[in-house]
Structure formats: structure tokens, C-alpha cells
Image (cartoon, rainbow, N blue to C red; front, top):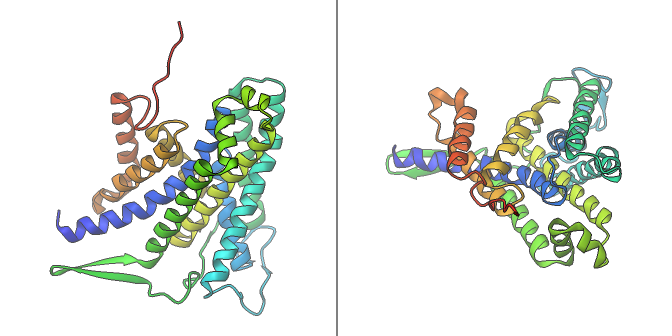
Length: 324
């Protein structure tokens, strides 16, 4: 492989892999606290993209009950202003976080209060996901909606690097996605590792009963966990939407499956593992030859299968200890 192609693939892999990591962290946070997978996380991912699109563009022209609505008849005031667009992205992610809190109240807390089998909560979250995506389709249809090309500001659409006699073209949006992802991963690492909220979350994850005896409100921090999970999912949805468009109500389903692969690969419940797993799968997909790009998902899951054969607990997961 030529050096120019290597650099191109690395940049592509790091950009999408960092989004996988942010999205998978939402799964990891909930799993580390409750020990179950929130299947509604993919729907929250989709909602985050639609929330931000609504704040930025404000119109759905093609189909659905909101067909013809236009919040900005004189033109969107957010297009071309990166700071205001960033604010809209954060608001969209926060709204997705609030939806995740509602999901916890409706799908998880009642099951937890009754001491139900975790599998029932998983099925309940799957039902909520189906309701959300069908509601989205009812409201706005199943068409693809694209963010304005100048959503991040009046940047050049692509950057070029000269490597020898070859030119590497890197989309500006990919660079922005990668940088935003790094900032969010660093902030989450700081919150979890250095703040009182993070210490309380780790205590609840380690042993909810003991945390409760120490005066920590377990239910409160479960809600905080779901909000953070939804915020990360919604942010990831917007980042993907700006790069590839909001591809219908079900476009979070594919990323939901990929997020599951990421957390299994990295190690269930491991935050560093989710980051590493996201980057590994992103890079694996990027290095699939263009002629076989339709099979890149197969490569990612085949890699997952091989690694789990060698290390069932994942790259950074801990092997389960059986007490006898």
C-alpha cells in the first residue's frame, strides 16, 4: 500500500472510529451501572440528529405529519455560524439525553423496582426503540435530510496533503468530527475520573447496595448515567448526520449494532475498551479496499469474532471470576 493511501485510510478510520467510540460509550455507561444493554440507544442516536437538524434547518419538505413546516421562513440564522451551530448541536444532544432519562423511567425503573429479570428490561428497551423510530417516520417520513454544507462555517470542503507525488484529500468535516470526538472523550474521562459525580458513578457501578449505604442516591445517579448516555448518543448522531446526512428514522439501527460490536470488542463495561474498540473497528473498515466497500461491515464483525475467540472478555475487559 502506498504511503498516501495509508494516510488517507488512517484519517478515514480515525474519524469514523472516534464517532463509534462516543456512541459506544453510551452503551458502556448504562451497562456498567445496570449490567444490561439499552437497545433504545440507537433510537436516541437518531433523535439527536433530528433534533439538531430541526434547530438548524427547521423544515421537513417531503413527507410525514410535519410536511411543509418551516421554522425559519426567512432562512436559518444558524447556517454558516460555527459557534451557533455548535450550540444547536449541544442542545440537540441534551434533548436526546432527556429522552434517555424518560426511557429509563418508562422502560427500566419499573422493571428494576419489581426485581424483574434483566432480559425483560432489555426487551422493554427494544420496544421503546421501535416506538421512537416509528414515531419519527410518522412525523417526518423516511427521506434523507442533509445539513447545510456550511453548517460548520465557511471552511474549505476538503484539505489536501502532498505526499510525494500523490495528493491526499481529507474532508474538512472528518477533521472536525475527529477533533470534537477527542474533546468529548477527554471531557468524559475527566468527569468520570476526577469529579465527585464520576466517583459516585463508579461507586454505584461497583456495588449499588454499598453505595446506597454510603449515602449515594442510586436512582439519581442512574438518571445521570442515562442522561450522559443519551447526550453522547445524540452528539454522535449529529456528527454522523453532518458527514453523511440523516438517513431516515432507522439509520441509528446500523450504528446501534456497530456500537454493540465495539463494546464487546473493547470489553463490556470498560470505558477505555469502548474507545479502543471504536478506533479498531473504524480503522478495520477504512482499510477495506474500495472494490469491497459493501462488505466492510463483514470485516468489522469478522475481526470481532476472531478476537473474541482468542480473548473472550474483549481487549480491555476483565475475565469473569467464578466463586466456588
